[in-house]
Structures are given as structure tokens and as C-alpha cells.
Amino acid sequence: MVKSYATLFSITLLMLVSCGKEASLMKIERAPFAKLPDGRQVEQFTLVNAKGARATLINYGAIVTSLYMPDRNGKYDDMVLGFDTIDNYLKEPPYFGAIVGRYGNRIAHGRFTLDGKTHQLATNNGPNHLHGGPAGYDKVLWSAAPVQSDSAVGVKLSYLSRDGEEGYPGNLALHVTYWLTNLNQLRIDYEATTDQATLVNPTHHGYFNLAGQGEGDILGHELMIAADFFTAVDETLIPTGELQPVQGTPFDFTTATAIGARIQQSDQQLQYGGGYDHNWVLRKESGAPGLAATVYEAGSGRFMEVYTTEPGLQFYSGNFLDGTFVGKDGKRYNHRYGFCLEAQHYPDSPNKPDFPSVVLRPGETYSQTTIYQFSAR
Ligand code: BGC
Image 1 (cartoon, helix red, strand yellow):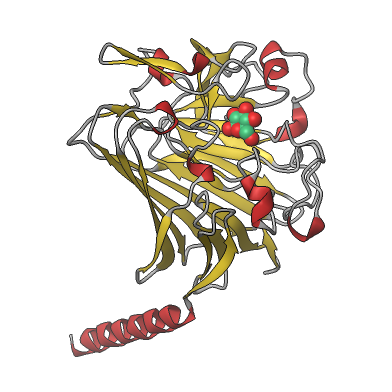
Image 2 (cartoon, rainbow, N blue to C red; image 1 turned 120 degrees about the vertical axis):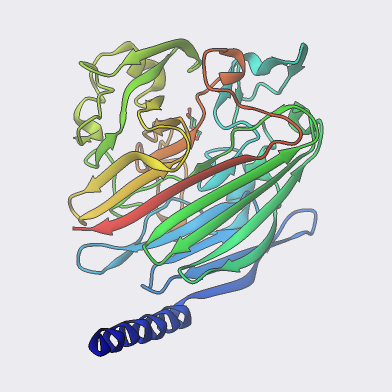
């Protein structure tokens, strides 16, 4: 008995010492990043966890501007595409690293009816509305405050999206907290409330490359998506409403498969997307975060797991990257140099009564948690 008390005491002491040590290695730095054309200050936050992984983000667009994770030899590289300066982020898409909303992905013809009233949103993507409109959440300045727990450092970003902004009804108070945990996770917690019935479907639009940003295309990355169906789309990438089985199609990622293995196949769905640009219907139960996808890059040994509370996952294979964008460190982003795994509700849900609802009403709280977890083997 005495011995076990002593053991317990030393374990507790060890835990306290290691917690203290971890806490002393964890860091949050806050610095000015740039000025917006109207003079408002954009800030940059640098997060360092106890293992030495590092992330930077800015409160313009709630953008993760870099994310350094180790390979199998402990070498750190930047996992996400992005820009060095604010000017590029101010321009049009590609939404590198941002939070998009109020509605991530497309709403057909920018139109929806809620409680009998029809709302018309901007059509900023052919005939459709995309990622909240031309001045969505990726194009606004959020307020920001550093946050810390025993096992993570983070930044809580808040934005009050006014009634009528980009055509959406209701004042929406949205909080997004990015955490860099000591388990090498980028964890994103979302919370929102409204004063009128509205739509809410924000997502994180990070473009990943596990070999390092700018280090070639992602076609060799091996992807698994925990889904047996995807939402088939029309030629404008709006779901037809059909949940199509992935089995026997290039959309079957139920076992890890190279992204490029079937991307060139003559398949109408692939042609519509110019590659993969579709929503997978996740197998997981809704509620607690469940496994949505894994990605492995053999060269570096890096492995990414995605967990989410959301029912859908948009896998976008960087089809519109064409070498026009010159990103961080002068790296040119050629075709398919990054991929996105965007946890969300299905595209065009407001017009598809059979899809899970995206309506938020006064008195309710929207919440989402999505985790990108990194390791190497
Ligand atoms: C969409 C793509 C779009 C991209 C913007 C993705 O979420 O599904 O169609 O081009 O965002 O960069």
C-alpha cells in the first residue's frame, strides 16, 4: 500500500512537472500583420505547441497562413498554401486557409425560401452562390483574442454578421476558435447564434500539401474518405439530390487510394468538377467528432486524419489552381498543388428538403468541431 501511494505520488509529480514543462514550451505571439485599405489593422498570431509544431493565422478572413508539422525524420514543413502579403488575400478566390460562410459551398441560383420568404443572394460562381458571396467571411476582419488550455494554444475569432449582409437574414454572432493542440492537431470549434431564422454552414477552406506547400502536386497522396455515398452534381456543381453509391466509381475512397489514380478516367461527374469537387456523405453518426478522412504522403511519411461533427465532407482536388498564384516563399501553385477537405453540410441544402437542415433559429446554438490531426510514420 505504502509503495503504491509512493508510486502514485511520483506519477502525479511527473505529470505536474511535464504539464508545467509543456506549458512553458507553448507560446502565443501577437503582432501587427498589415493594414487594410481602409486603415484597419490586421493582426497575426503565432501559435507554438509543446512539441514545436507551429501555426500562424490572421484575423482577416480567419485565415490559417501557415502550419508547420514534422515528417518522419522530425523535419518541419509548412502544410498549407497561402500568401506572404495581405494584398493577395484581399483579391478574389481561392479562399486559401480561410473560414468561408455564412454558407460554405454552393446555393443554386443564390436563392432559397425560409419560412415562406424567398431570399436572393449574390451569384458569384456562374449561376450560383458560392462561399457566402463576394464579401463572405473570408473577406472580413474578425476580432481576436488569444486562448490557452493545459494542452493547447489558440485564438478565438469573433464576427457579428449583420442582418442582410450578403443577403442573409438575421444578425449572426459567430465564434471560431482555432486550437493548436499538443497532439499536433489543428482543432476548429465553431459556435453561432442568431436573432432571426437563418442559414449557417461555415467551413475551413485550407489547402493542404503534406509534402510541403509548393512541393509538387497532391496526386500521389493516398486518401481515405469514410463514406459510401457522394452527392452527385449537375454541370454547375449543384447536387441533383441523388446520393450516389461510390462503389465501382472513381469516387470510392473507402480504402486509401492515390488521389491521382482515377482522376483522369472518363466519368461525367469528374468532368463536371474538372476533377474531384464533390461532397461525400459521411458514414459517421452525427454528434461527437467522428473520423471523416485520412491522407498519407509516402515521401515524408506524414499522415493526416480529419474528424468532424459534420455530416458531409467536400473533397476538392485543387482543380482550379493553374499556376497563376505565386504563394509563400515565391512558390508557384500549379495544377492540383493542394487539396481541401471541407467539413460541412451538403451543398445546396436549403433547396433540398431531404438533406440535413442548415437552418438556425433564435434560441438555438450552432456548433461544429473539426480536427485535422498530423502524425508521421
Ligand atoms: C469548391 C470549388 C471552388 C473552390 C474555390 C471549393 O470549396 O467546391 O468548386 O472552386 O472551393 O477555391
